[in-house]
Image (cartoon, rainbow, N blue to C red; front, side, top):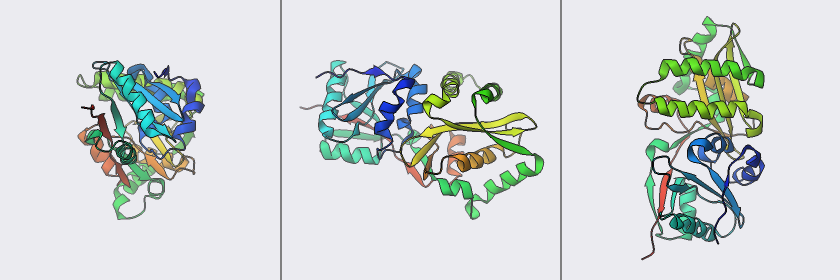
Amino acid sequence: MSIVFKTIQVADREAITSFTMKSPYRNCDFSFANMCSWRFLYHSEYAIVDGFLLIRFRIEEDERPVYMCPVGEGDLSHAVRLLEEDALSQKRPLRMLGVTPEGKSRLEEAFPQGFRFIPERDYFDYIYLREDLISLSGKKYQPKRNHINKFTKLYRYTYLSITPALVPECLMLECKWYKANRTDADAEELSYERRSMTFALQHAAELGLTGGAICVEGQIVAFAFGAPVNRDTFAVHVEKGDIHYDGVYSLMNYEFANHIPEQYTYINREEDLGIPGLRQAKQSYRPHLLLEKNTAIKKLQE
């Protein structure tokens, strides 16, 4: 049986989230908004087969097919074998990315000794308790409170929910941020991020995004947006700010955490990509969990 994959479209949100929202997987890769807004780069596709959501995408360098861990209830071994057949038909071993400890455990139960797992530290997700980010209580968060207090002493601000009318101003701030931060080494990656972010903002309602912005004297100085991963985890996909406003990122983080729907216990602030400054910033918020993500490679039968 060959799988018929379909390119992920905005209209597929309900079909895909009917699986992801009730799954145990909290990694940001399972956010529908992420899948859809990055499909231009990864050619993201999905299929629903025998009670499982199957996701296939392609790595840019050589267009090789890679997959995500099947999501659903039923015979996991059958779903994995279907993915393996699809990979082998393209002369590639089955390779799944972003496999968390929950997924790893399920795969090992279905295929004892059948996979090789490679931890990818640069792609581990930083997961925080929402309550920690909205209270910032205790000595460990004193520096964050200091940054926020400094900002509020210097500026009078308002917090605004991102609406279609506000999108052009957010994009103007991103343009300013891009010019200030772009280097020859990361120009391509930042241009991809800009394309994904622009698509997401322009289709916020259809993607199920929640977004917010900090406004000072009628000007947007920071914004953030994100979307649900599952029933208890919300992912922050983008956060941009004008660093000329001291403390703006601390304030944006605090306000956004306070405005995320209350049903979410955990906030996933995604990976650090091995970037030292980004790693330090994410660690400074004292994550509740550094979510391990593995590459899982199916061993070929001898």
